[in-house]
Image 1: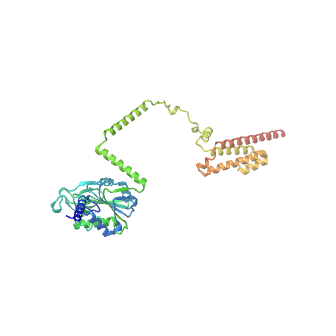
Image 2 (image 1 turned 180 degrees about the horizontal axis):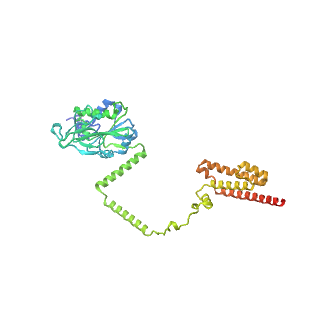
Image 3 (image 1 turned 135 degrees about the vertical axis):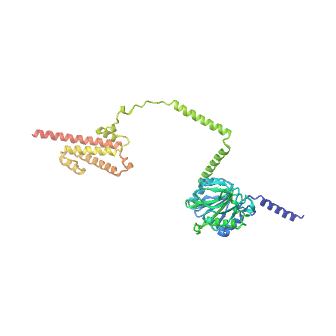
Length: 435
């Protein structure tokens, strides 16, 4: 054997070995379990630019008009991200029998059921190769005759549309169902083997493949959606819409995996001991806290004094105005009312005058000296500003009036009233002496 012929035989042997160990449902696989013929069929129907065959499902790249076709997943699917994609208008087609698609099925209330053990129609009499037929009037099942399956599993949901069924002696079992998710669609098929290279030689399987492609990329009325068909299979990767979202999805997925591991295998001895110790410590702390807690007697309400704010009258009104949570604008308005009423009484005027009229009467009667008149004008201006803040009905505006403003206004009010009362006493004495 020459050197060149030896190299040729080595290349042939390596090629045969790689083909022999190729994983089932490989999108590029050309062996009988591969999906290269289906990928070629999709590209022939849609065009190369519309079909994306990738080892990564990037949710940030998906648009509402796109569709995702998942073959035999071997990783836990991100059901929340897929559901969000469908609610926005996307379509997801899951073809899975014994993979990890159960999480997505359960997310939408579907469950797996065994295929009929004694199918009425089967290929070459083999019960593991039952023949499915259309069920219902779903767009995928229209114009279909019979589809050969290979070790399928059934799917069941009481409200979803039936697509394919296998008739059995013990009863019919649905092998494909579809339904709406928001603006999008979801189709679950219990056998990805229907579309492998070896099965596409059957006319019914090839027609079913074309029907899936149409359903994924066209509207229900068979109008073009102008979206892409994204194909993923086996252990593909999933990435989120951003670094934060991806990290969150990874944490959520890790938590789900941990829970699933605990459900299957239980806690390890070390974790169980730590968990038991934490529970015991928590019980000790709780019991100890209750044991040392001091209980004070609570007198009945009928012997408790009535709060001043609840008594009513002048005292209750004053308590409400002076309460810590009351806006100080109310106190300013009370001071204005008291000042105006007192001055009108000293002027022997019935009713209440406006600010300008009151200032005019005070100036004509000499009830206050010039400094007092200027102080009264300034104080009435402050009260007018407080009324404006009160009418604004804004908590931030009313909070501009503080305790110091009220205290200053009260001091000026008391001083003006005292000066006016002194003038009134002098005038009274003068009238008495004149009489």
